[in-house]
Image (cartoon, rainbow, N blue to C red; front, side, top):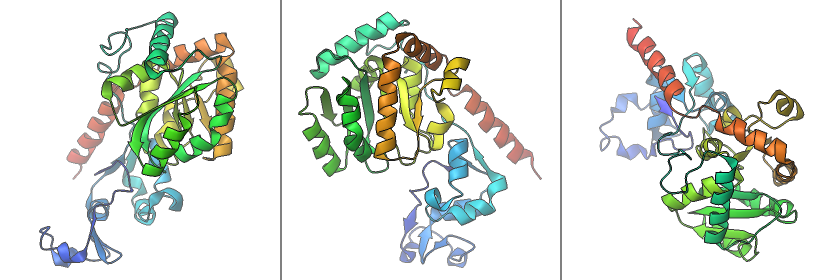
Length: 315
């Protein structure tokens, strides 16, 4: 059984047992009974031979009260059967060298052209700071209320923000209001082609999630040399190497991480991003490191195949 997001637990009223074709004998604490209701996720966690989820850090987080959403006790019991395997992306669809939605590029010069085109499309002028982007469902989980609070740290230092997403009506309204600033552009809704142009043209992609099982937008960012600025949680912690002084000296840094997941910490991360951006050699090194990361499915598929082989060969 694979958990993508433990928040979605397949819960239904107990009177749906017959409609779901479930055996009342299994409606017990040791089966799919969950606080007087049916939980198909709980049943899977009880009866699966092995359990996987979409990142190693999320596998550990699921065993805590903060992230387990009521399933943490059961997941602690199954710790030896729980494995975190990172998601990947389709590197043919997300490839800056061949992407049909953009003016394809392999170099920093090509990315600069993509940025110029994106600014023009979104109605933004030139600015001294980084062009940051959000491509996300607008929700509390995604931490976008924190971004609204932290936004002055970016805008007041010459940065810009592009947002593509929809969701919570209150957040949609707040971002529409924020777009009244000349350095903020917001598109409510989703447009796949526009998402490619944003990833290609932005300098940084912001993912301030309160929890994130794996996340994909940071992987798109790495692929396109668009530096991820991420909360240190779930798959974000596993896929982005923070630009600490040691990581920069070692030549392995690929982005900016922050914790705890608060507006203050996010504001500090945005200030750090502006600082790094204005150090051109350091920023270019970050971009090169990011684009060299392996973000496809090859390694993950091999891990899944090995796990499935192990399960099928067990007595």
